[in-house]
Amino acid sequence: MEMKTAKIINNISRLDSEVFSVVLLKLYENISNLYDRIEEESKLENCLVQLGLRSGDEYSKELLKHLGFSEDDEIADEYIYDYCLSTDANRMEVLKKQLIEWIVESAEIEY
Image (tube, rainbow, N blue to C red; front, side):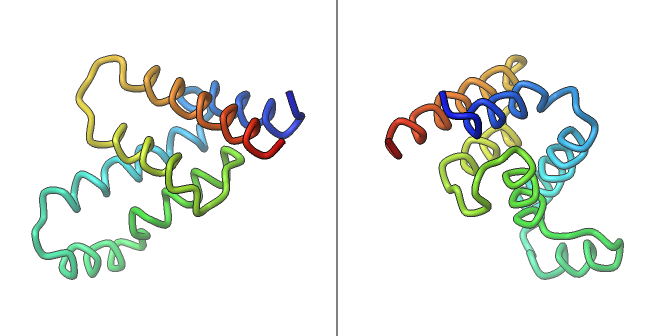
């Protein structure tokens, strides 16, 4: 396994224990839920700006980058977004499994 892939897997395994990852994930989760609940996106975005917060997409990109994925990795982003809207008790384990499977599959495609 390539060193980069191993590092990303390590980052994913710490997704629910490393403070920076937890904060990014929770911010993204909460903002995603707000977008899901509030119909007028522009009002929500104005509110976020007033509070000094960024859009959910920006937190998602930052989390992807922090984990070692490309900021525009749509599949990893979709898994994280699904996690944010899920209510399953084991959603963190599902997210980790999906992300690890995806990075392993991506690494195999590259070679």
